[in-house]
Amino acid sequence: MRFISGKGFALALSVVLLGVVMSGCPVPKSDAELQAAYEAAVADAEVAEASEISRELLAITPYNPRVTWEGVPGESRVLMVTWTSYTGYDDLVGKSVVLSDLAKAETMTTRDVWVTAAMGVQFAIAECKSMPNGLVVRLEQLLGLPPNSGKTRFVEFWVDPQDLFRPSPDPEISDSEAELDFQTSDDYVVVSPEYITWFEDLKASSYGEGGYPWTRLGYTYDWGNPCSEIGLSEFVIRTGATVDVHSVTLTEDYFE
Image (cartoon, rainbow, N blue to C red; front, side, top):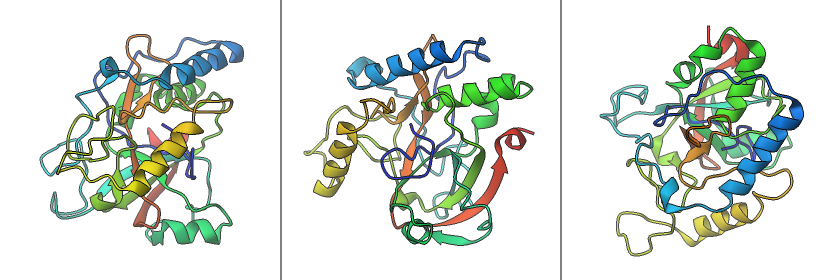
């Protein structure tokens, strides 16, 4: 998953623990070792396999206690979060933002924002809170970001669930599993030609030099956990969605 706001690889975050995502704080490693581990993750993620499907993805449903609703569950917005270096949200807390308008205003490309559900990230890295360097490295690993990615703040949004999708051939958000291939015969999953084009274009540009370990299976690639590559459930806020900026918090303060 990418945790930046931005088209292509504006990795942002949806934060909820999936299965075994933690392996404790990272053992100190050299920059070269971290970079090598990351590049291996990018290469591995290029080929998605049935054995890598998670059946514990976060489902956005009224009954899920790991989802924070603004009001009545199922009838209101959900709280999502992204980890980013972008400072343009800092003065927008409490305000509504149309993401495409924001992009134009800041002379940035119109973008989808990659997020995770804003409830479990503190728990996911609880062991690393007292280690500033360990905290940042662990976040980069858990969220499938490159070493020294430069992320500085967590931005939380209230988002209409209808404006969310999983970056997967199976984009629905109300179940706990994503499929490997587009299910064209499934009446319950509507995948437009535009979505397929978006997906295939992103796939074609994701795994080369400077790429990201995009799993395409609804979760971030945790390249720091030797037991499992399954990280956090990831979602995308579609371009043009109206969101409310709930909070902007520096990384070191988000876990206080």
